Image (cartoon, rainbow, N blue to C red; front, top):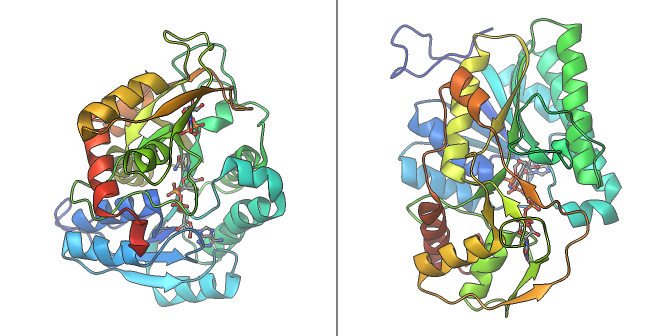
Length: 354
Ligand code: NAD
Ligand code: UDP
């Protein structure tokens, strides 16, 4: 297996192979593409732009001062993938492409199984055909369901998902396990993200959700900027220190660095490796609101509301395995996450369309 490393990290490597980033125009993909370019990798992004804009990639190039290749297309398009693998020397794939809205997945399960599961199977078929066996997959802490205790380590069992989105992540994880068992050439990282927030410190790239956001961080920042009237705090009767839900919020730049560490690690491993990408610290909804108010100087109007169906009380990572095996840990604290989110929100009130 060969992932040719950039000149800065290995002077002797043969710099011919590229990294294919599916979904690279999206929130996490764009920050990771930037980290790859900054580290000296050659990057090809494949994205169908269903939930993103090519403007994110223009800005990634502006920040890095480097160029990337962008192909607008779908991971379900096998002909396109075969063409990509034939015309480029690709050493590894970072696979972000997919749909991610939990509520929408309940209403449109076909779209979720098609984009996420069919897309991943199709990608792996094309990779096997092209003899490319290094894959980093975007999974989620949602695969743990409702764990009995905190923090969550990778040895915890996975659980029956409560929605089609979670189901697709678990199915893909299971299928990748089977694939690696069938052929020892595969080297796969399953990265289970906790709650990514924040933005690049330039304020040029960040999270740009379509329509009304579902997640706490983008919802809260749109309240602060006056686009939304108030935030609903979903439940104050959870068995947590202040009654509101507790999550492990991780800066998207730390998450991006985790991908580079995983990419390096899988070039020396085979089979499937699972790593939690979280900070190991849980914050409540009310703590997040206070931290955001302090960082932004804006009051966040909120109302107490019923629990949101399907939510768990608390969820935070044990990041020890990633620290031991990848030499990676999240370095950015809550204040930096809030400040960077606010800078991005203020500079881009309409996301990339503004
Ligand atoms: P995002 O929607 O910003 O990025 C996903 C990108 O994939 C978008 O640019 C979209 O246009 C593209 N895409 C979707 N379907 C495609 C297809 N069939 N072919 C080609 N491109 C396609 O989402 P994100 O927050 O950056 O998430 C990236 C990955 O991480 C997703 O797989 C998501 O499920 C996973 N994840 C995200 C979170 C989170 O909270 N953001 C948490 C855990 C896991
Ligand atoms: N949350 C909230 N109001 C919102 C959105 C989210 O109170 O408008 C809470 C939610 O109940 C959970 C936390 O914020 O406790 C994080 O939710 P999010 O949807 O951001 O991520 P999740 O952990 O559900 O993937």
